[in-house]
Image (cartoon, rainbow, N blue to C red; front, top):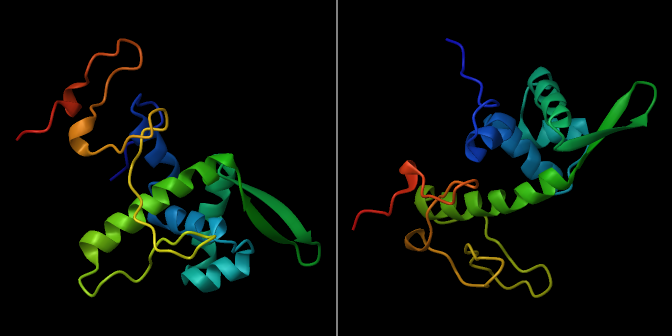
Length: 159
């Protein structure tokens, strides 16, 4: 069965999933953003087959999330660096970390988010950048960028 491509959809979630929706892609971005840049190190850390890693890295480079730079000529070896698109995705990774720890770690979280400067454990939340106000699911809806009218799929949450 062929997968439906999301690139033509107007939904930003669908378009984003087209780029990072394959689970290896998300884990590769996690590792590259965490400082693992070389193919061999990525393969070892992820336990991924070389062919799959090559395909996912090529797709992430093509989609502008990673850049590739040769660091050795013979044999040719490359390292991968995050672009601004990948840096922006780091916020999604933080949200996935918190969500996964909260709902799918009955033994307790294996990873926490800590403030780099103080070492204090953080409790990330979604905040409106303009107002600084915390946003909960009851505080927002999705609206059309063109008309500013609410979208059907985002009607207020039932109470």
